[in-house]
Amino acid sequence: MKQYIELAINGLSYDVVISPEDLLIDVMRQQLGLTGTKKGCGQGDCGTCTVLIDGKRALACLTLAIACQGRAIETIEGLEDEGRLDTIQEAFVDEGAVQCGFCTPGMIMSAKALLDENPNPTRAEIKRGLAGNLCRCTGYIRIFDAVEEAARRRQAQSGKGGE
Amino acid sequence: MGLPPFNYMAPKTSAELVDMLAEYGDRARVLAGGTDLINWIAEKIVTPEVVIDLNGLKSVQGITYQDGKGLRIGAAVKIEDIERSEIIRAKYFSLYQAAGQIGSPQVRAMASIGGNSCNASPCADTPPPLVTFGASVSLLGPNGRREVLLEDFIRGNRSTAIAPDEFLESFLVPEPWPNSTSRYETIALRAAQEIDVASVAVNVAMDPKNGCIAEARIAMGAVAPKPQRAPKAEAVLLGRQPNDDVIEKAAASCSTECQPIDDLRASATYRRHVVGVLAARLLRQAIAAVS
Image (cartoon, rainbow over all chains, first blue to last red; front, side, top):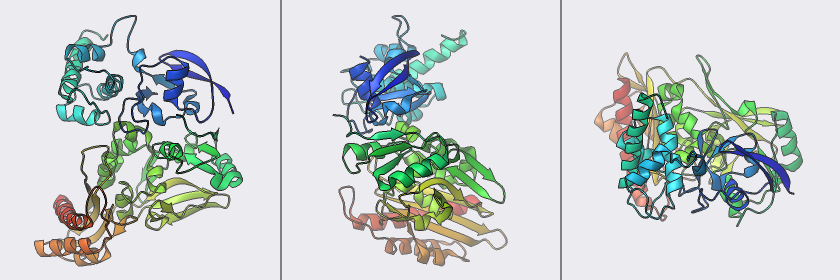
């Protein structure tokens, strides 16, 4: 039974017609053109569909779109600001942490959640914080390096009054 | 590619939820975090006509502790909030440890403590510690609330004592014993996103006057259809000085008091062996921490 709902994504309000069983990942990718969030396993195991909802990590492949009304969704598309990459995105590029790129949006959203909670994580904390994101290309080392670099850059920026 | 169709309801009060369950019974499934339910719907393990989202209810939220009463945890509380709760870490340490074992950061942010018990996987992480604390579940239905000891609520593999017209509203965990602490450890093939091969929870109190074990509870996970107490092991420990002999005897008893299976992750023989190893290790840790 189709319904009209509003979804707040990256600060914008989207009107969508959905069925109750529609998953957030499918609505974003198929109806809204927000294809930055990837569908990997579709089961909640691989983490490529990681988004933030009200600042908390969420797997869009296990989230009903209808349950997201009134909540603030952030996706990888929301990190870029008028053509400028976010600090974490830049660090991933600079550290060579992107190969095929399929895991990258989910990795970056997880990294963002981690650094927002823990601005100066140890390597072990980074590994644990990204434990829900699988990568088949890089072997993870450069991804962890990128998160460390992003943490350094964010600390440096906040020293200068924030980004 | 998507899920089979269902209706969705989001009650705002417990009374609304109870009415919905009365109407739909087992044609409905309650949604908390969805990390199990959505997968089950996708795989057609369950085929609800209605999904009832209980996250809007106040009574299923919150972690509150009262001296003299103990802990109340709303059923919809997220695993990551269990992990981050200072009072749980301080007073129910094994529950903090168990929460940290579940899934991944994303899963912990979505999954609920209520779902972990209601879905009753034999390998679930939060039930064994809760069982060692003597936790109960508070169920709300058309006839009001009833409390059931968690150890009795979980009946077996994916089977609980919940009725189709009830929902799990909260966990009630008694105050810890004085001079006690708890530990939980798992054995698994991966560091995250894994299902345990075996797990052990211990809850131990020491008598400060004579250095003997005043209370002991042991519950094992993933080695029986439900969290498995070890009453013979507990009897070995009670009132005794915790020397190597006593601990090894209790640990050996744990190995005999479970019913593990062979499966793709491990053999029954290994599981039987490793619960003894974990029990000895955790008993030593807990006793040292309180002595």
